[in-house]
Image 1 (cartoon, rainbow, N blue to C red):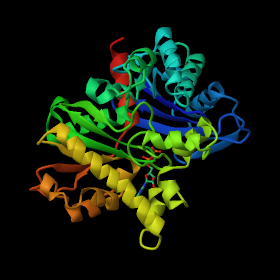
Image 2 (image 1 turned 135 degrees about the horizontal axis):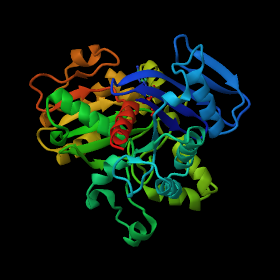
Image 3 (image 1 turned 45 degrees about the horizontal axis):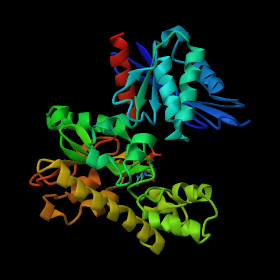
Length: 399
Ligand code: ADP
């Protein structure tokens, strides 16, 4: 079975083609700048095929992807009939979806309805689904939700301490994101430890441009740092993370910002690492300038300080046999961040091994704690797309 994986954003579509049950990635690529005259498809065949073309909308974008997949020169398929199913990343599933599902008209309606909670993400996700349906009407489509894994959080974790009617009537609560990554990492941790996923306890750190942490108890999410939106929690590339809401009232009342839209842009696009270092939101740039630039140093310290706080807090939920897992672009690739986050925590049973931490080969999982560290510390490259492919295969195989 060949499975097309689609991760559709407002102006881009990332795609992968997987063959099952071999679990083989055949090819991947992305379409960028949808809606502009100079849109481009980068199809990562060997050699890479890059083509600039005007792409009007997502339906057009998917058609260009399907043409690349079946192209006689750089394609990997003879015809479209060799694609048997599609798996779609969907950011928000609200409380309706606790697992991945076959997309029916009702499911698509619900994804549309969730757009009020994720206005930047669900509309392009739904556009990607409709585009695949239009281009390949006969194949099953599966939705895999970023929020689903966190639906196991207890009420005391997901409710905000505001009048309960806002939860009951307006769906205002903590949802959490990066759930597909955490589900993948939980299973991978179980494999590594020789456990069942339902026996995994740990604090999982997905650190990238968008960063979050998840407390996993008995294989299930019990807390996470992102909230009603992906703005809460850690200091991120351009997002503030946690901030006293009183600051926002003050900024509006005193005219520091003129409206909520400006405030939204300020907190989502102009804050985080970018706002402190000022020259870039990229952790590599910050690390390159740590010794010479005070702002880079401060941004780094603020980033790692908040992660330390959350890890310590979440260990109180996950218990004595916890594992700490680092993942995401920063978590997988930055020994400096991992060291700053976990150094001098012997009193909490955490002993990071500096040599293992520094020498861990890129792209591979590894242990970075001492053999006598009570809390084991792992680095595991995440793979959300393979999890989407796995879910799609499992659901379609049962149809
Ligand atoms: P996204 O949230 O967009 O998926 P990624 O998980 O790709 O983000 O992570 C991007 C971040 O990873 C960037 O801040 C980048 O600087 C950081 N990163 C990538 N490689 C390294 C590295 N070798 N050292 C430090 N940071 C890195």
